[in-house]
Amino acid sequence: MPFSLGKVVKTGWRSVKKRLSRKNRDSSRRTRGNEGSSQCTSSSRSSHKRDGDDDEDDDPNAPPDPLMWSKDLEKHFYGDFSFAMVQGNGEMEDFGQVETGANATFVGVYDGHGGTMVSHYVRDQLFQNLINSVQENRTMSEANLYNAFAATEEGFLSIVNASFENEPMIAAVGSCCLVGLIWNERLYVANLGDSRAVKGYLTRSNRISAEQLTSDHNARRKAIRRELRSSHPGDRSIVIKKQGMWRVKGLIQVSRAFGDAYLKKPEYALDARFVRFHLREPIKQPVLRADPSVYTRNLRPSDRFLIFASDGLWEHVSNQRAVEIVHKNPRAGIARRLLRAALNEAAKKGKTRYDDLKKLAKGVRRRYHDDITVVVIFIDNEWLEQKADVPPMSVLGGIDHMGESMFNILGGAILPNA
Image (cartoon, rainbow, N blue to C red; front, side):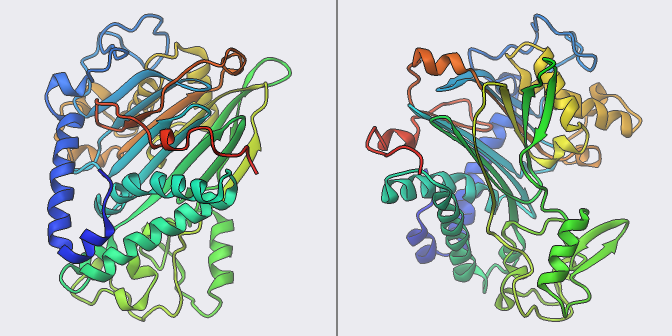
């Protein structure tokens, strides 16, 4: 159930935290609980029998990963999709969703940092805000995405405002965000932070190739450091290299995110008691941004699939390798296969084996890999010609139950793309 901002403001942060904690525990039990839940109850899920397995990083006889969840293969209006998540932190900070409609598919990947509060809130609110904007404008356009992001940021900052005095650490919680929307035959992608969308397409020589659709908002990139220095000309500490990594104000790698209010408004500054987040000098203007980079294009006959994933995947798997894995293997369980490829690589870097990582307690695994969310959306042009009937469906990461999507309230009253 989405948050009610009015209730949040009235009851205060402590009651909200209880709600979040309860919901997180329920989700966590499904994500990392006993063997039955971790293997997923979806009829498309098959943990032990993997016909056609031919990826070099995959062992069909290996034990299942107790911290992994997946929906191996489901339908959307343009084809199939596969969805998987794995936990690395002590508390799963990633949230994700896939929403399917009669002529639309929405994907959301929310990579939290400092806690689950923002990523959870964004999962519950962003899609709803997008639907509200589409209803109001009666058409789909980039403006609806900007409106939805702005409303989501404003909503969470209102919670921070109501809670900061009693719970100041709420100002240090944030989340990256990556969303994709296929509306009829047009693709919209929007992002904050360093989660990434990559397209797999066939070249003229009939080879699969990768195209990165998003730009990482991360201070490791020279372009981002230039952008920060240009927008903060009097701030010599706007980007600092710390422990071999470029960080904004020496604190955070990403330059855009939801939340992180202490880096956006001086009234939410954290004092010297909070050493990790304390700024020696108050900020004079927002250091982080919450306006997304938006990319729009029509889908092409050569497009085969889209991969949406948090940065934990791309830390270990290149864009090209990811599309090759998807292209050469069976669709069912392909998101899970991408996770295993990343985890095998993480284990190698840590001079151990993936099977040994599976034995580690949650939180301990963070030494080797982050929480990771992967969604693979297949693009099947023949589905449009056949006009396949796919009912509105909502799939939330870590939860086996699938509900009805808010796409159903749009019906057929919305105009084509603007």
